[in-house]
Amino acid sequence: MALLLCLGMTVALARGCLHCHYNFSEKFSFYRHHVNLKSWWVGDIPVSGALLTDWSQDTMKELHLAIPAEITQEKLEQVARIVYQKMDQLYQGKMYFPGYFPSELRAIFREQVHLIQNAIIESRIDCQRHCGIFQYQTISCNNCTDSHVVCFGYNCESSEQWEAAVQGLLSYIPTEKVEGGRRRAETPLSTCSLVSPNFTCLEPQHLANLTLEKASECLTQH
View 1 (tube, helix red, strand yellow):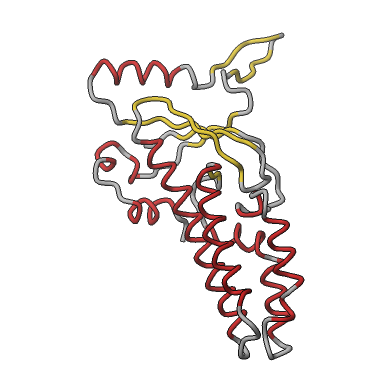
View 2 (cartoon, rainbow, N blue to C red):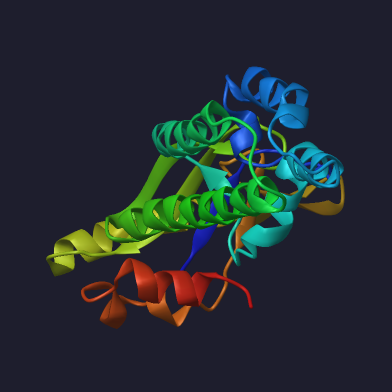
């Protein structure tokens, strides 16, 4: 069983990972305001406009991740660079024949979702391949706030390392303390939510041969 501890506050409003990039508002404002110049057919304009307006919300709906959508700043930059490059190239063309422009927008959107899924999963795989407690900084795709992902890795090379890893893990497990006649949960991580999904792909015997494709299948909800 893979033990994942996830830090950071979440809210109900889903904003989308790319929305957290510093240049998103400027880029997509340009895309929305110039959409009427991209197709000869007037019917393409409202369809394309809706795709751009709902980009962030639809991204969160399509991720289908079994783990929290939290991405590192480095990987967010990589995704943004690819998406903006493809969008800018699409907008460099003149007017397109009917149906072409919204079709290309959908293709870029689907590629973006795939890139974000892989980016999040790759970071989780790297985290699990450490020995013991390991954490890395992320951005929550739910609300664009800074967060941390803390995981427990099984990749220990000796019994001494494994013992130290387990001792480190115990310090993160909540304990109960009696206070004023009432019991309350107490943990060193003040804003921590404990999630223990049974992801067999992250169990010790599978980590050595774990590929991105296998992890994606395991960690993506269908």
